[in-house]
Length: 240
Image 1: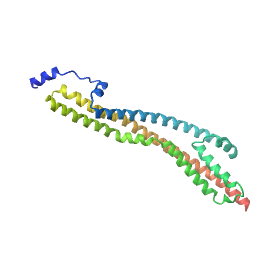
Image 2: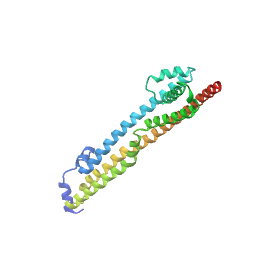
Image 3: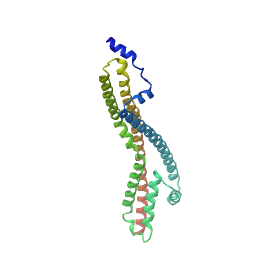
Image 4: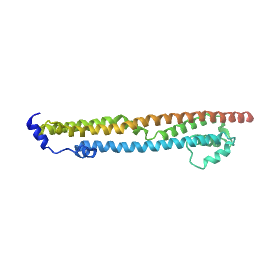
């Protein structure tokens, strides 16, 4: 090492290499990237916790409804039980189909001919709404999972550019001078990965839970549609 460089490095103030110190010493643009990624990470964890609790609650509600549905209680009794309160999951499918059923038999009953098709359509629309409710805000996890590392890399590139500009201005290439600037820049990439990795893992897990719930909704819709279809055929045969 050049003796002059060694003397300058010895006289240079010791940089704070703690995480807080790296943040405070970083360039303004890099600070914005870091704060944005930390905020996105906090929001991701809030979504993860909220969705985990939602899927657990949805599963419990589906289990409870299936127990009630297959317990032998009449459809009218079940409808009265679930119609007076907000319904989600399987209960939402049941209430929507029963409402269409009851509307069709009000009055003269002339709408019974196409009732089976209308019930299927109502069930499909309700399933779509339930899936959208379960999938809400998951796109943010996917976006952070894919874009987070690149945003952090942008902060790293900007920080390294600033570090090399400062090195060129000071004409000092000693490791003690170079290392803090490079560490500040790489800290942005670390925060990007810190935000992205949990987001990707949680997104894949939650999407699998959505698919499982959707499959369960579709299975119940097929079973319930078949039950109502048999009752429609019986009423048509009696009317004939």
